[in-house]
Length: 223
Image 1 (cartoon, rainbow, N blue to C red):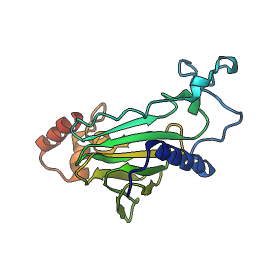
Image 2 (cartoon, rainbow, N blue to C red):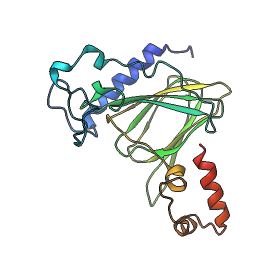
Image 3 (cartoon, rainbow, N blue to C red):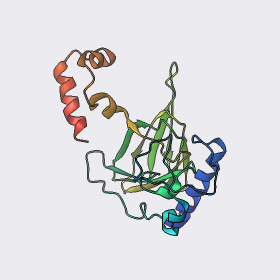
């Protein structure tokens, strides 16, 4: 398949993300726009609006996803997220967009988005992706993706991506939340602050060797 243009990919994912508003995780907007005032100390369930007279056209533009992410790390991947925290014009629209770059063999490890469903569009490369349902089934739904393929990860379910090709891969993902949140499973368990009691981890993972728990803490904290 011929490589799709970056512009087309961005347009497609943006359109798909907007369509998710029908089942949006965030509250519906009540005005034309509400550009986030990230400097405000007022805390609400969202972000306070900038005064309308201070809003500029530049507030609705971002080049955050134009530059490839650095994949020179232990995971071999990099997620660049455009959300309300760094793109104020998204405030109240219930959407966010991310670019994920993968080195060959790189992975976006098991994680969850507590506040948003994710729709992934593969631009370049080959990925193995999947998600796991909740108890009691813990059923894995996984697929191999090629350029032009879409895959949806339901809100709140553990999911992952792995580059199984020999070349770098690039994906774009849309969310039906301006702030979907991310919690990596391994880091949440082994790199929490303060640490989870070793007895809890030992019982949950059936690990008798407390030295192994400490080793896992050290390794995961470096990812």
